[in-house]
Image (tube, rainbow, N blue to C red):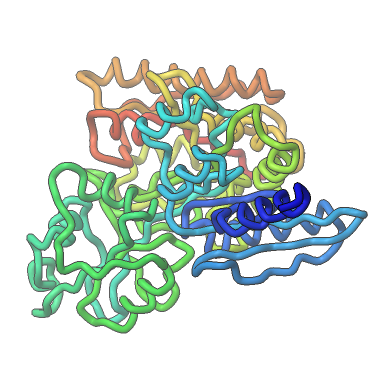
Length: 440
């Protein structure tokens, strides 16, 4: 066979044996269905139209829960593939080079961080990008009279230990369980926050790849209870959720944005740190920008753009706290810490600029801001007060370095917890700094 024909034969054979994902795209995002179903495509569309000046077309991919978005304009043609098969699938795609971005509705696991250590530090601010806040919504049928449920009772329900609504004050009716599939970051979040090490999901639970389909089926079943991302509540009804001695909260803009809601979670994009193509870095910056965060809000998730809101006090809020904040409105931002009591986590570091930009946009000065620190339960009030004040001081210093020399800060000790006390969870959730802005 002539050399040219042999070469052509080899090329044809190679093309036939290439895996389906080898088709060339300018950017690929793999992972979470929570992100990939609507939020991811919306962000990509906004980014592509901003970058090219043209309109974006969308077509179904080669498999279910996949889309390809394309834009042409300014002499540029860009094609982006979104494969939404679950958070764990996104990690594998990023690790083996099939994906440029891993979309995840849970933080990276220690095993995943270790596996990628030679390529990127998934814990670093260069690799871990929070693009939205979501509340894990606990859904029931509209005819169900139950209003609230504790995390512990929720665990017992999904483990099958509580199997009739009458045990929770509802009607004498069997409980039917609706859960996400085990590739889902939504499932990982629920398993971590609700089931923990105490409970195992009952075998009778119906499992779903799609948040929307799960929600629709709950809305049709009077005996149902299920969980989805907040953007997929649709025609079902939300329950308020309590953690420990903290008050029960329903997910809304303030409780989720501040992460006070006990089943609030962050939605992430993970990249290879400093080893990204320029297009990937541009998209990440767009997703974090005010314009990108406006699209987050339009998609049904909670934007990270700060908003000042009137507090919705319940009977448990002490009179001293009401007096402290009576001339202020609360910003929809809480500062939380990654290590110990002083190091701000990756989201908090980006929130510093968001607050500086908010104050400038609203023509507010540093004197209009009040920072209030909180501590997890401590052995005595003095220790709790000291820790809470140190947290507020830490944020005050960080804001000053970012361009907003905030002067007013205080601590409120270990009062007004938003979660169960003790351990890593208590330290992370109760140990926070709230941001309040003076009323005009």
